[in-house]
Image (tube, rainbow, N blue to C red):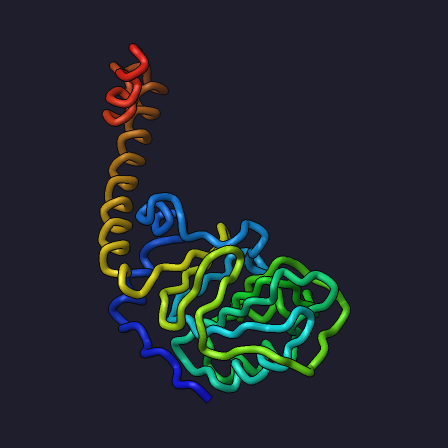
Length: 226
């Protein structure tokens, strides 16, 4: 089997855990997000880690099994299921094995099953939905190669981040640049929220003056004579 891509540093993951997918996507120019249908199987699930990739034949999970057993702590398994919607690619047993091995979570462009169990397991799984039909186990497939998942290119070793809003992919060679931009955006948003909150309190007390329009809005609207 091909070697796994090197793990991203713990420092990078710690920085990511202070952010969210919206900030990271904003830092990439409002790009990088997988198809909007790929969501966590239960609210509140979050995942961050190094991409471990697998490409599947539609409706077949043979290579997904192998990808799980190739994995280990720090990796997020990302599976190109080709958006197939007639069969589930995994359920309780495979999710349990992935969790036991230490995989951080699974992202799949396709469906899963055993919704009740998966939703209660706290093991992060992101998919397009659920169906009872099980998969075939014949192959073929590809492991540890560049894939497309949810319309986004994923290369082994990329940064994968998922939360309630969806999943974003950060190319490995752009991680430092993107995280720095996202951290600056986070600082801006914190200050902006403080300004908004202070204005609201003053308004309720009948003391508000001026407005809270952001400076960038005024600049942009000048082009339209407003």
